[in-house]
Length: 279
Image (cartoon, rainbow, N blue to C red; front, side):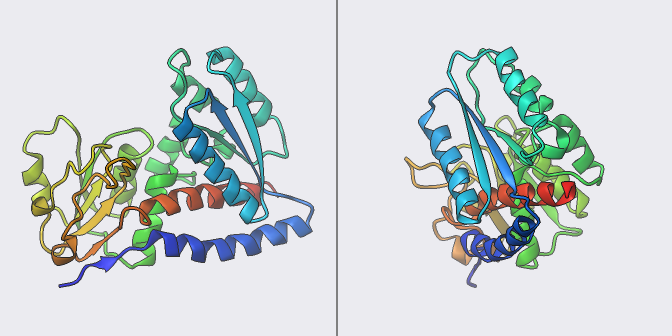
């Protein structure tokens, strides 16, 4: 048995062609899809992620606006920046890079983003709408995973899915998206007892817990679909031990080159869609 590789990098490249075509159509109408990125402080990893998102915009003919605030920024100051972008009709999407410095009320700032511009899927309102099956921008990593599953025609309905992780922008929305596609979903996390036993019964396993190789390959049921949403550059691995996964899983995302490229691609796609909705 050889596991099918769910190649997110190739899928993102394919999707970029379609995005570029649609951006060109809008630009002919005098509209340039625009993403505003807010970076608070000088965290090197966050700065790198923001730069990657800005580069993707430039590559596809979109515009990005970089808002860089000092590490001493207050919640009120950040809310003022968000409010200004909410009211700027030339800005279609707003991304507040996570995490922000500890003195800031991050949830309050996320929820201040206009839901129509919440292209990163971080607001409580957007999460609620998505969960209820209403139109909303889903959090980019889980939405990107759903796009991978759809593209590779992975059966979801009726399957037992285990999501390991419960973060508000990954684990929780991932579980809801799978549930909305008729999977039977179990949410696990760092305090789950008998994690191994729960994973052994799963048809679909999503590693989204942020711990290097937490999920062992011998926990994976033969023929399961394995989605690794983790990436740990120092250890050069994800949340799942993928060594030898070829002989166990029916399909899997590689690390890197699986989920990551589709996260950024989904952000760009959401920004395009926000621009299309307004015009």
